[in-house]
Length: 217
Picture 1 (cartoon, rainbow, N blue to C red):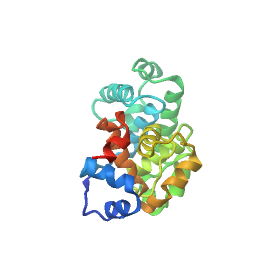
Picture 2 (picture 1 turned 45 degrees about the vertical axis):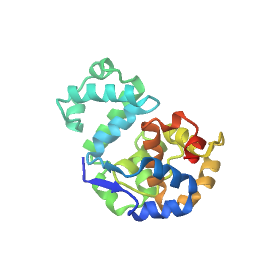
Picture 3 (picture 1 turned 120 degrees about the vertical axis):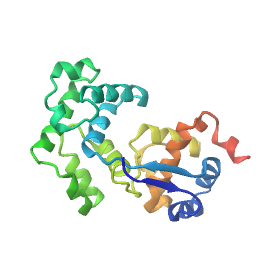
């Protein structure tokens, strides 16, 4: 894992968002300072992202930890390529995801993807590079931008956790792509920062009660 990043009232991104969105101001007052650490292992992150597709975080973590054990503490392409289909199947990885993980693994080993080159590419170029690998789509590439590269301007409207928290924040059932983009346009270059606070609200259980309850406090 990389360096820890702290978000609080002194952060430029937070100051910007609080001026632009009254709902986020209430959310920030509720949660306060948060910190996070970016992933430094691109390959392992993407493998875990593939595993996590359409699964709850709890189930995904269990399977990812099983794979970590199989790889003796470090999930690398050199170790994964040596695992048999049955070994991967036995720890709970589906047939399609085994194929996707091997697609990624071969792409890395064959130098078809160069994570180092992403430092000189924009978001769209990075997404396009990742999505050339079958099994990595829009959602996976956006998660990579946010949680590995630390991009602040990514709006993860494909992510179910984000959608759930977004729906709670604005008390709306309009969660289609167009509606979310229009509503969140005011977040601008700090969309990922706002998303992190929504994820935090979900993790802390705040979304179990109506947002209007917190507005009154």
